[in-house]
Image (tube, one colour):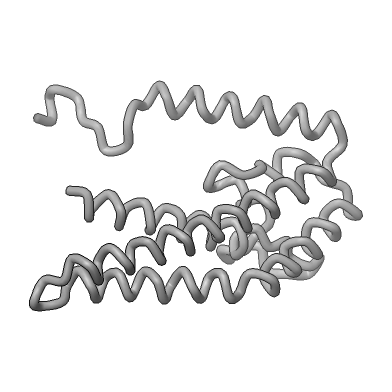
Amino acid sequence: MKRTRVFTLAAVLAAGLLASTTLAQVPDAGADRRGPARFGQFGRDGGLPLRALNLTDAQRQQVQALVEQSHEQNRDVVSRLREARDAQRKATEAVPFDEQAIRSTTQALVEAETNAAIARAKLHAEIFALLTPEQQAQAAKLKTEREARQSQRGPRGARGSAGV
């Protein structure tokens, strides 16, 4: 059970890092907006709902520069996260069972996840700082509304009594 939680946490954090760095890309004026890197998807993992904030062209350019800078600075963070996840998976699947290997690879994974979370938070803060006070207030309002909708749905994967 604990192993499942660790894997789930690792997947969520990795997805968050990838979403905030990959999906946050702001396309050039002539870019194809149908792909996964289209503008405004930064908010998928609890980040900023950029599309709804009506950014100016200057803000879009600044966001794009920050995202590109983050990509460059965090390539090794993403790489270490992937390597730590793979090492832990191998340790948990190893025969014979080696508790110490699992413990050490899990510690390395936690450290890699922490670095990824810090990178996501730093990018979020830098982008948030580019917003006007009105945009910041709108972002806070949208976040509150999203959280209210999510709390009304209940925990992920929960089913009603009819599904039991």
